[in-house]
Length: 99
Image (cartoon, rainbow, N blue to C red; front, side, top):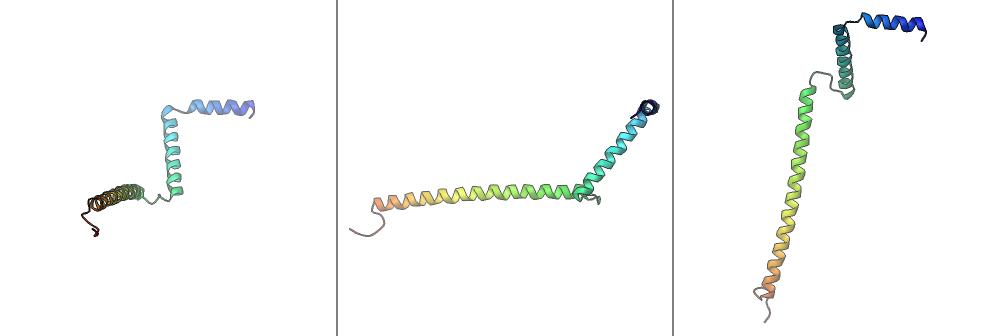
């Protein structure tokens, strides 16, 4: 960039009012947000609903995973307790025939 171009750029920047600069930044931010939403496939105005649904699905997945672990722990615990009871019954000769 040559000196006259730098000077012209600085002069143009000085002509910007703060409100103009804020408006320019707002428009740039809105365009950027629109591009990101379009890139994600959420530009049709239903983005908020879609994101809420996705969050609901993720929460349901987490609940199902938590419930599956709890069920697995209960099954293992019940199995161990049943084995202990059967073992105790055999040891005490309450079950299992024989003299």
